Each structure stands twice: as structure tokens, then as C-alpha cells.
Length: 87
Image (cartoon, rainbow, N blue to C red):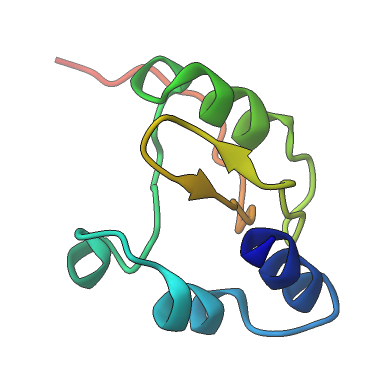
């Protein structure tokens, strides 16, 4: 229920980073500020990858995604085209 409320606040214009800062209980929050940057789908749990990679436009927010350890919300900041990293 809380995740749905927070999503509604974000959709209504509340700052997503501020909501993350005040409501996340992720132990890595201080290090990553709640961000997952340039993560390939294979590095995420399947439900997280499906939800995150379904976002199309910057600002789009997922519905709450439940995994075994938490409930997640994602907001797309930007899309970076896939590229091959040279050796």
C-alpha cells in the first residue's frame, strides 16, 4: 500500500529522489542514492528487469514490483543506447 501511495505522489509531481531518500530502507542508499545506473537486464531479477525495461519515456514510473526481499519502484531518468565496450 505504501509503494502505491508513493507512486501516486511521484506521478502527481513529488520529487522521486526525495521520496527515495525519505522512504527507502535499502542499505546501499547512502552509496547509490537509490539509483541503478546502466544495469543490463541480465544483472537484475527478472521482475525488476521486465518492469524497468518496459519504461519508455523519461519520467515514467513503474507500478510497484515485489521481489522476495523488497517492493521496488523505478523512475526512468534517461535511456542510454546499448554499446559494445572495447577491450
